[in-house]
Amino acid sequence: MSNLPDKPASAAVAAFLQRVEAMPQARPAAGRRGRLVFAIDATASRQPTWDRACQLQGEMFGATRDLGGLAIQLAYYRGFREFAATPFLADAAELTRRMAGVQCLGGQTQIQRLLEHVLAETRRERVNALVFVGDAVEEAVDPLCHVAGQLGLHGTPVFCFHEGGHPEAAAALRQVARLSGGAYAPFDAASAAALRELLRAVAVYAAGGRQALVRLPGGAAQRIAGQLPAPQR
Image (cartoon, rainbow, N blue to C red; front, side, top):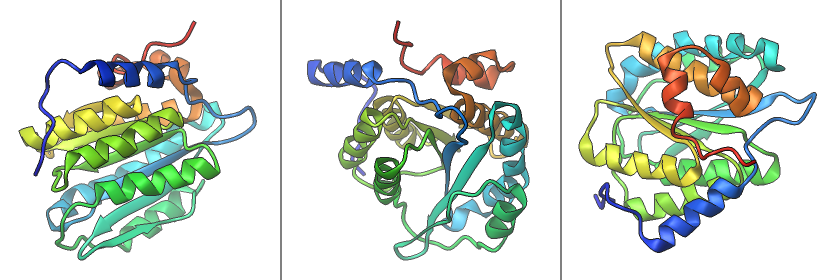
């Protein structure tokens, strides 16, 4: 697996990040639900986290009711090049029902395919945020970063929640998050509370924008907000 080490950005990368920072902050239009893609690696090692996410996803809807609500699309990859995505759903029970019908299968990661899918979605209608939950990156990193940068220019940040802390995967996911204007956060597989707070924070961001996120109490919201590009004055 190729990798991008943590090192000072080149002049070209720095210039690109300035372009991302100059884009308007993702915020739903008045009277419209925020749109969030909730993507999970569903390869064989992921079943415990998948089951945990089934239990937690309803809290994303609940956290955003006062902000106008949220429509969530579930996306996942598994097995031999299998990739699937639901419609955007505003019903927590329906999303749970669809998640409960999925079993994880062995296979390689398909993060580039996921990012390209979300790019196509946001070109049709703005997607306010992508959440990716996974533990591995088994693809060349440069193409991932290219698509992540395009998402950043469209105002769709990627929030990478990394389970397990593998250093090469961490470096790759940090780059994807940064180039898209999003954030990276590791979490412990044994801690449902950590994942809950991370998902809640991004849901609030997708529904209400940066201002809603910074008002949200808790360390997870602060860690995410601190990585986002500076607001435009």
